[in-house]
Image (cartoon, rainbow, N blue to C red; front, side, top):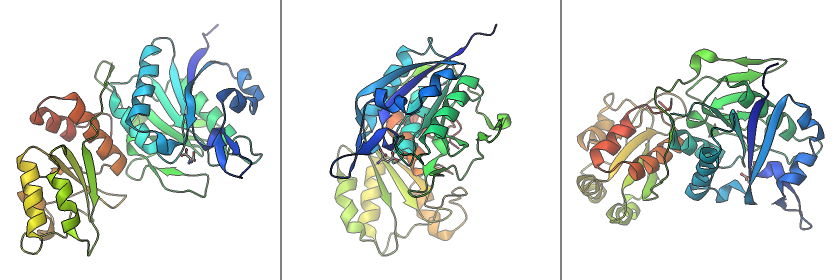
Length: 337
Ligand code: ASP
């Protein structure tokens, strides 16, 4: 008889495990309460163990500390389990899934994030389907990546973004096909699954000295100069227009240009990504991009903001010199490009 797959379910919080308080606000409850709503979960031919954050959190409160807590749980139980499922709020799920994609370097087991738009305690909730499908996908061991399962679609974590607060299809990976779809059967898109050539290792540090600036027509660049002059600043993600055009030029916005140039000269790594969801940067196409070339800004190609900031935070923390960080940023680590 084949051995049953063993899955570790890690509960961090989020709407999936919330219920209405007396003041009609959603508040998190404990993991034991959560699983009571799926009494038949143990009938799956899968061994499921559970770990929970001490205090379940709304995902707006999950950042580097929560990411590293997840890494430490997964690392300490890596050999014991065939796969992992992380229950997480949707608001920052794409950030956590992106960060874990980079932190779990060379991952060769599935880490599937999921959650729900309606709490599991509500009759019409999407939680039950999401959770069961995520467990089945993780147990199948077919997608050894960090992914997000939502509304029957499996997305690569480092490619995903939250797109909808209303409908059940809350996520998308606009620049990459889905890794699996669940209907009567779960159909895997195996050609698209990322195959790591590295041995698994676990990054343990995140550098929070990273900022991002989203350009918009008419913005007052002066506001951002003090930020560029912060001595602690080490990384900057610039969200530029379309295929890589920018609204600052040397003549009109000289002080901003100068502050950006100085920041780059003292070692701040600046990476540009597009505000568009689909397609990649091409900073050689328009005259209006030339300043990015002149300043030697790193092209973030088709990265999402979530992947760009987390990659920057993890690259800066885990490599010592600027050249190694830059090499890390430029290279495809886990299918993010
Ligand atoms: N505010 C919730 C959270 O992200 C939303 C959700 O889970 O869908 O924790």
